[in-house]
View 1 (cartoon, rainbow, N blue to C red):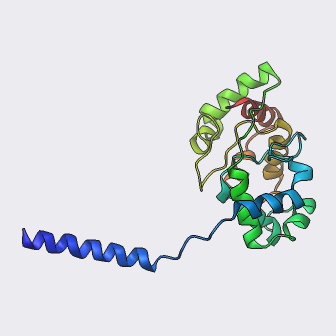
View 2: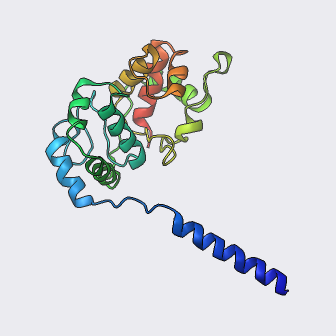
View 3: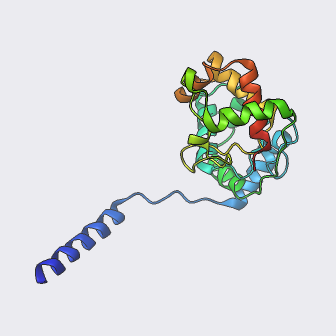
Length: 205
């Protein structure tokens, strides 16, 4: 019993020391995030992050790690978009982090699919992929309801059809090069398949 107690005590002390050595998580200031967002982002993405412009993404309730990654990559040029690169260049790392976490705190509004025939085809791709062309199911990474997986895969549910189509085409033609997995998936999809799965995503909730 004494040896077991000693082992448990040693393990606890080691875990405590490891936690003490770990870097502290960066602090987030939601009030500053709201202020920075209102200054830099609101014109395109709306006051609460629920964009009303089909080609501008809704950002409300997006996983903050994903949003931060995109802002950092716009600023560095890893992800290219002349408008977003200009805005991202204005942001410090703290600004980008505060905005990302503020957006995550905003409630996303549901979207809507528009084409019933395409939605059925899109549902098949999203849930089951296209096995004969080795296209995986979108649900595997983005979850069946499009909520995504925090810190790994973005939330997609309710996103504008036109925006998702634009990004999928950009992945396919190589103009968006900041995700090799998505480039590989999109490269195997035709225009109708991309439109179908994008329309299905718009109606997810």
